[in-house]
Image 1 (cartoon, rainbow, N blue to C red):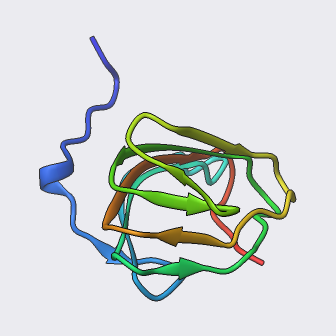
Image 2 (cartoon, rainbow, N blue to C red):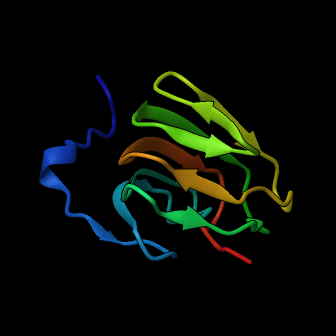
Image 3 (tube, one colour):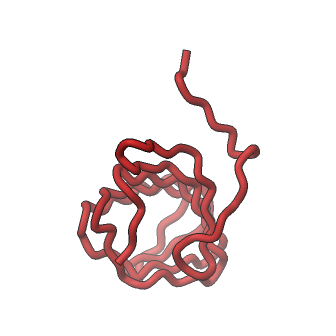
Length: 109
């Protein structure tokens, strides 16, 4: 039996750290600050280059078309950025939904 179950349909979209980005918090570990979220990027949203100083990030594209360094990525792509590693800018060419995990607090610099 699973100790925790989250249904995305039961969660609300919340404003993300950038314009055009929304988050559904699926899980948060209160001890470490780690979170697993659905992220929705509006078509045309551009996220500037940034770091997550307190967490490693894994993002898996569930739908949409994502542009990174002039290369296109679609459903089925997994991205990883180490804690403190600068990444981006990112561009959502269409609406993009990703399942993303941060293994520590979700902070952005």
